[in-house]
Length: 105
Length: 166
Image 1 (cartoon, rainbow over the protein chains, first blue to last red):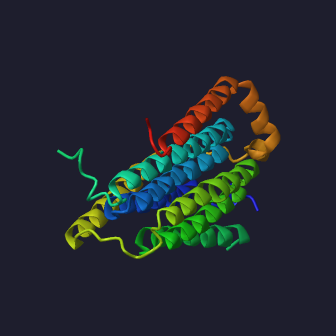
Image 2 (image 1 turned 90 degrees about the vertical axis):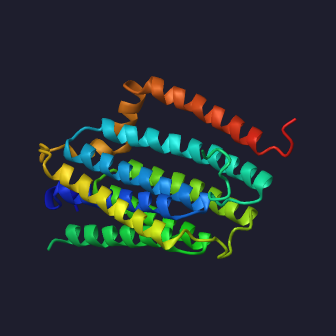
């Protein structure tokens, strides 16, 4: 049950890249701000997965501590981001990013 | 084909397919539910990489806290309908091309990279004991600073969602 013996590191690199690109695709195609936010979480998780894989394959536990900190920052980010979304919804009555274009030049 | 490889492929396909459904589902609640499946698949990968502590933290923080927050906001704002207007097909097509090119570029860049793999790496680097020692010896200051970050985020979230800011 040890991944390091039977799975090449390249598999994890390609898997994380694919997850990251799916997240980026979601940010580009969707208009609902909450779904875009979830796609950003997906991209964060792709990077986390790659970091854990590198940490395991290079035998260094610092990478896993970094992933722990990324998770902590992501939790704080989600709390503040969703509060901002609720405030925007209360003022503009929508979460559609095409309508929220006040700052667009 | 060893059992580890079969588990790896299963978890990878589960993660990728449910991630694609997150992006393409019309109902936001379905997106949240499939994102939870993706997170469980990623937690399975962490277990496969013998990072037990991170797998547990990942389930608790993401599936337990963050996704509940997302569901709560979607239900509160009453967005659980398929009313989202979609972008123009041309923009969607361009986005798919751009994401595909990004994938191609990253994979090509990583292909040339030479990575020295330590095959005899200590399997206990993902255990609670090792990570706890590293966290409280080398990363004690960042650990304490992150608690200030949490306090600031908490105050900010409460302040932002107050009904009337004056």
